[in-house]
Image (cartoon, rainbow, N blue to C red; front, side, top):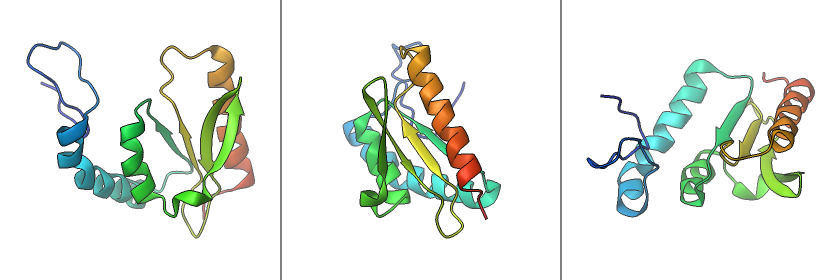
Length: 123
């Protein structure tokens, strides 16, 4: 049985789903701490956050503060957000879930990721 942080699997569901409401609240601090620890441990060149659930933004906002530093980009008229690297933290790209997105939109995200990597090498 597969288990991971941020997933709630009802007994009658064959696929895991994102948590909501009380399930999210119960896992929120654990998810924040885990994300921070993974960034410190693995020192990625880029953090790429993919979620289609606005409720999960509370975790992202808590880890990458202040939240008003996010810059907004656009792919085929749909927004995505990014942070330049800062004080040893790698750049961050935050998009919607790629499922059901067009290739044009996904390619725009990839191009932004490449731009962030080349213009902001992590220290």
